[in-house]
Amino acid sequence: MGSPAAKSAYLGWVAAAIAGERGASPTFAAGEHDLILGYATGYDAADVAIFVRSLRAVYGGAVVLVTDQAPALLAFLAEHGVESVPPASVGGAWRPHPVMQRFAAFDALMSARPWARNVLLTDVRDVVFQAPPFDPAPRTSEFYVEYDGGLKGHAFNMKYLRGVGGEDVARALADRPCVCVGTVMGPRECMIRFCRTLLMLAAIPRSEIGGAFGADQAACNIALHLGLVEGEVKANYGRIATIGLTPGEVLSLDGMGRIVNPDGGVSPIVHQYDRHPALMAAMRARWGGGLEVRERRRAKTLSERGRKLKDSLARRLPELR
Image 1 (cartoon, rainbow, N blue to C red):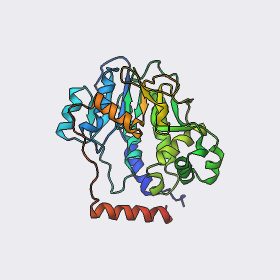
Image 2: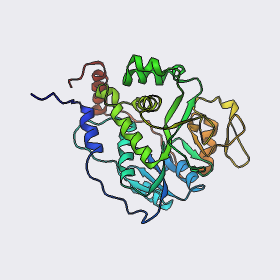
Image 3: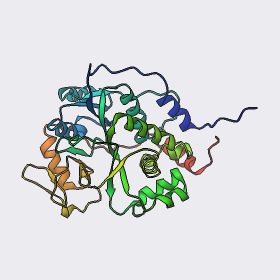
Image 4: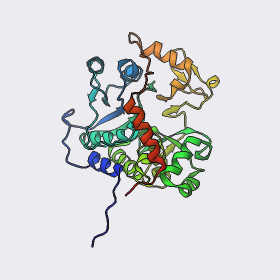
C-alpha cells in the first residue's frame, strides 16, 4: 500500500499555477535585458501612474504588469510601453490572496522570458522611481531591510512567521533582519528559485494561512534566513528606501522633487511613500497629472462577506490533508 499523498486547497492551487509547459516570449529576439515585473490587479490608470511615469523617466527597458484588462488602463500602459498581461485563470474555486498569486505569475512570466538578465519583482501602487533601478547590476539576489529593529520588533512579521513556520522557527529568526517582500531584485534564475521556494513554504500551514495576506512576507524571511535561497541583505536607504515606518520629519524633498532619505541620500527606488500624506501629495502632483484617483471604498457584496467569514472560520479549524 502506498503512502498517502499530501493534499490541501493550497497545494491544488499551487500545482496548477506553477506546473506545466510554457512558451517563450518573443518580446526580445536576442541578447539579455533587464526586466521589471509587478502585480497590479484591481487598479486603474490613476493608481499606477506614479509607478509607470516615474519609471519611464529613468528606465527604458522591459516592464510587464499583471493587470485587469480595462480599455483605459491598457491604453495608458501601451502609451508608456508597458506590457500588460491578465491574471492567470487557474482551475478550481479556491485561490490564495493576490499577494501570493503574484509569485506564481512572476514565475510564469520569468520562465517565458529566458532573455531576462536581472529582474526586479516589485509592488506597484506605492513605489516611485528616482534613478535607474539596475545601476549597479546586482551580483546575486538582493533583499531590502524595511525595519531596523529586526523581526522581533515587528509584530506583523512575527505573527505570520508563527503562522507559516511555527513558534520555534519564529523564535529562531527573531533577531534576524526584517526584509520586505515587496521589492526583491536579482538574476533571473535566482528570482525563479525564490518564487518557487516562497510558494512551497506557504504550503506548510493550512491553506487559509499559507494563502493569506502576510504569508508572502513570512515565507520570504524564512527562505532567506534559513538559507533556502541565496541572497544578500541590503540596508535600508540604499538602492531601495522602504519608508513606511520612517518618521515623516526626517524625510524631505529636494529641488528636483525627489524624496530624500534621513541620511541625505536619494535612493533609486522608494517604497511605501504613500504612508506619508505630504509625500503622497507631492508624488501625485509630479507624476499623476491628468488622472483622477477613484475613491476605493465600496460596500462588500453578500458573497464577499460570506467568503470572508468562511476564510476566518477556516483559519481556526484543522484542515483535512
